[in-house]
Length: 198
Image (tube, rainbow, N blue to C red; front, side, top):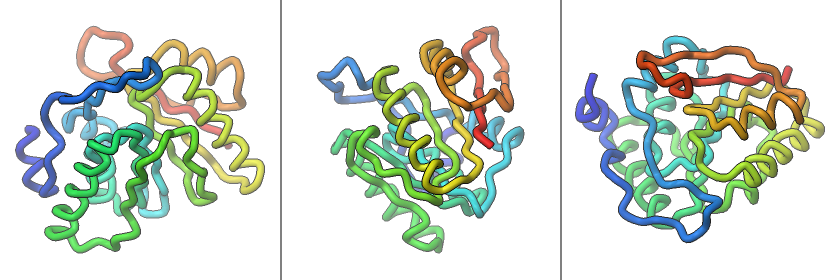
């Protein structure tokens, strides 16, 4: 399936190049996860209606709408850019016009990732290299503090994982590698890594 098929199906606009850049070296440019890659992820990894997924650096919300549409999962997108946050909100309006879902199953917040207060229901966290290792460490710390207050199984899903993220999770946290989903090309980094805290 191509990009236009899914954009029309979901009634959203998430394609295109990044038009603005952030001044901080801590935040990376916007690039949506391709629909073909989301297809592979969703065939090899289990999302359910009981899940609450948090997408850090959600951009225009593509992952959020895709998972909500196909799995009825609750999704929260965290986006620091007010420009992309507004586009995600516009996409939410258009998505809900076509797909009758509960409005509170899809949320977008315009804030820094490290300032997001982890909800006790949040159990899956998605990262497509949205920011520096320093911010990643703070976010993982917030997740671990949340688990201390409300024990549950937590999954960290890394797409195109940075070596810094991998090293930190494997050497400084109780998360263990659950699954590696390789993608059809010759780039060893072009994969999903799923880490679990049980």
